[in-house]
Image 1 (cartoon, rainbow over the protein chains, first blue to last red):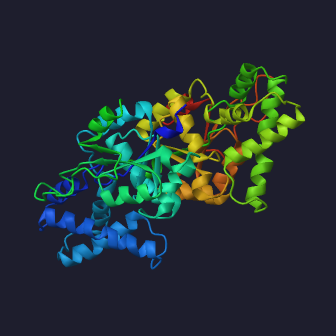
Image 2: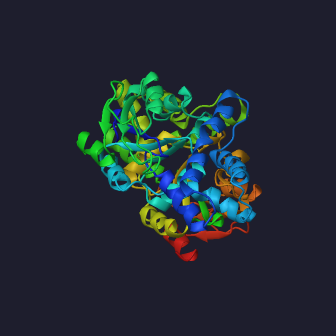
Image 3: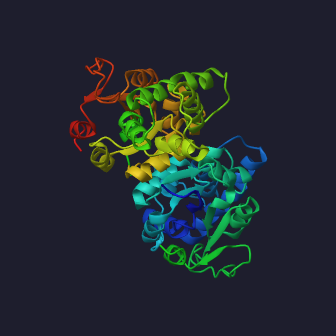
Amino acid sequence: MIKPSKILAFDVFGTIVDWHGSIVAEVERLGLAVDPIEFASAWRSGYKPAMAKVRSGKLGWTKIDDLHRSILDDLLKSFDINSLSESQIHDLNQIWHRLNPWPDTVEGLGRLKRQSMIVTLSNGNLGLLADMAKNAALPWDLILSAEVFRHYKPDPETYLGVADIFDVSPEEVMLVAAHKDDLLAAKACGLKTAFIERPLEFGPKVIRDDLHRESFTDYHAKDLNDLATQLGC
Amino acid sequence: MIKPSKILAFDVFGTIVDWHGSIVAEVERLGLAVDPIEFASAWRSGYKPAMAKVRSGKLGWTKIDDLHRSILDDLLKSFDINSLSESQIHDLNQIWHRLNPWPDTVEGLGRLKRQSMIVTLSNGNLGLLADMAKNAALPWDLILSAEVFRHYKPDPETYLGVADIFDVSPEEVMLVAAHKDDLLAAKACGLKTAFIERPLEFGPKVIRDDLHRESFTDYHAKDLNDLATQLGC
């Protein structure tokens, strides 16, 4: 049996999968008359404000699939794209179910899984995360989502929810993420934290200046294989 | 990507794992001065009445782990067992996290997974199901539980909840179960149904007389490999 101190909860978008590169490739494949990099960045930028409406109570519980679609509808208007049918728009929205993993992801998770319970803690909805895992062969032990807790990260209910699911104390769970705000919120709830550098998360043109080691993270790793090595897997 | 008509939702206790044989073996291993078969049956018998209290609203939302523990505490009294420490009782209650799969389970699920999204729909809590899957190498695409829906089967919210998670209509989901009441409730919600014979679910001494084919099931299979063959996997 897995010891309760060995539960690793992973952020997904950016930490596990390359949303930027996957969307750029999809936009190029569809031949849309837009700058693919600009389009991908704009889609992702709509994400936090949309979730903030749910977190503040302005909007009732809404799945990420529906938030993505609402942002996409606005984007298609602002980018003046009229060439897509309803089913093509639906399929484009489903790209979030088919995001590609980073090169180290599958191997790294496989190593970490040998000694730990590996679970997602993502704002993505359960259906999206299940499709993504099947498509990319992500070997999760359990898929957890904001949808289970009816709260989006960084609400404390999400981090504390993981501990509750496994009936352990918060310090027996470690959040693994490429985003420092996520890790800070987890730390405030008593979780352990591991930062993963993802220099290409926003594409090759964006030079990130926030990849340095911080005092509030318990581990700092280049990628998931590096984390596995540091944890002795 | 998985077609939405190909979602298989599995009952777990009895359908996927052999709760009776696993508990009998654990009671024998512990050397408890009871009839292991009687003890296993009595523990399981407390399950439906305990859930009924939650379903009726008499008891607030309670995880199966806690219901199992409450039934176990009563059993230890009625069987007059005083030899176990608190940590031994806790560990005995955790046997539900370590139940053994039927001989066909892992191979059958592996075959069904090739063409379908395979998910649990169990009254077991998420932590229990994740431990069980890791321990028994059950290759779920997604672990769903009454805990996600805050309703126990056979409440409609559970069956309809699976369809909602994948954003499909109920007839695009098939429940696979060894229990006809579960299948009837799923059918009433519009799901497809597959019955799995589990002649040994209640131990080798109980001859089941309810294993015949019914008009309300879409498939009737000896085991999961038989179901995989019937579905062309």
